[in-house]
Length: 108
Figure (spheres, rainbow, N blue to C red):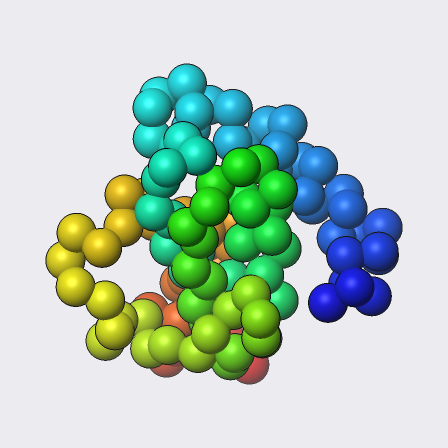
């Protein structure tokens, strides 16, 4: 994880999320430090890490492949969470969500 965090790509994505994505969500009162956030199609966990860095304490990242400690494996069609477990569902990878939900529609 330390190696990922030190990469310029990771730092650029984190900075972009912190400067252009999270402020509007905060302005709409969809995101706060006390928010419970589910990150779908979280990949290696960049958005999970960025949300933690932005002061959100309860962030759960899921993807089809786990990437500990930030992301755990879960089937997006059978999420292992009860209704109302999260205040916000977020993804910085819309194509990843589409691929996870509709794998037959994604070209290999």
